[in-house]
Image (tube, rainbow, N blue to C red; front, side, top):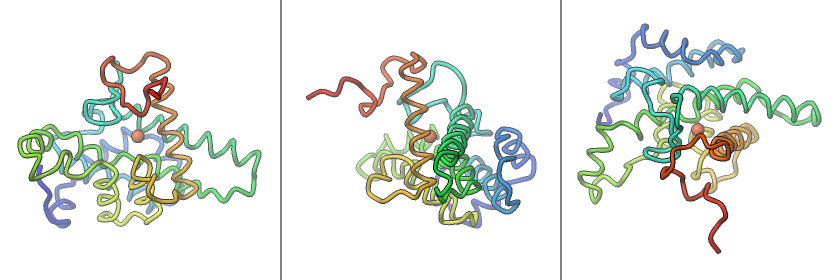
Length: 216
Ligand SMILES: [Fe+2]
């Protein structure tokens, strides 16, 4: 699906979709601020409504299109797993270092929304369009962190959450990540490294950055 105006993107969302998203992500219940929680639901609903997918579970269980594809499960397993890992890391770190200024609500919202750009980057229609004319569009035109930050901003989520979507992956190497973004980033790469170590990633789909030993 091609990009359209903010108004058109927001207007494609309806209540059944919001309810589907809320049911797919029980970790939303960890967010205390009602407006922030509603913003996370809206972000995923707008991302899904403007894609070929009908729900988060329809998105392949992968880190990138055609890369780091899990042998089983779906994309909700990753989103929920990274969110819960982020919470555990934050709570354990805070128990030994109580002065760590972790904003738990921002952390949970960031975990839930870190990959909200995937419906765009993974969309088969987009992939066909980009591959059909790489010289014009790029491949992809926008990676999921960039598009995810766009989604966060148009639904009115705080810049701290948009920052996590924008910088949880490689793009974050060009910035200084916030404390909450650092935790989500570690949970995200930890998720993929542990899945790989445990033989849960399909052969032939391993991203170079996770291959070991590094070639010297
Ligand atoms: Fe992720």
